[in-house]
Image (tube, rainbow, N blue to C red; front, top):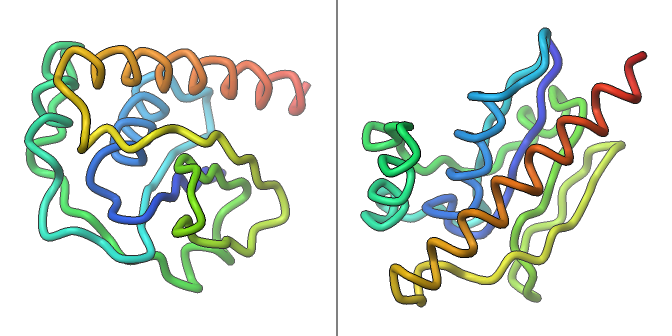
Length: 133
């Protein structure tokens, strides 16, 4: 099984959403995990709400700390945040998306960013499929 690692600072919003979308639409033989450099205590309630709107329940997810083992086991990584606080990852194939922090947004604005994350994940999946042909 190949693994994509989605990374941000707190692993409470953006990376959780990206992981959930990837796992819902993942190509055969792929899975996603997510982690953060300074994980929060819990997944942000708005992230749970926004994903329930999409029929995906992330209410039982817990933010995880980014570990060396996660990085060495990942086939690819996506840094979803876009600030100086974003972690550096040591994975051969890395993308940076620069997604703004949804935790500080209204639910309406966060919904737009959630939709952006979904479209980026779907594009990323297409890219992975074309690489493995």
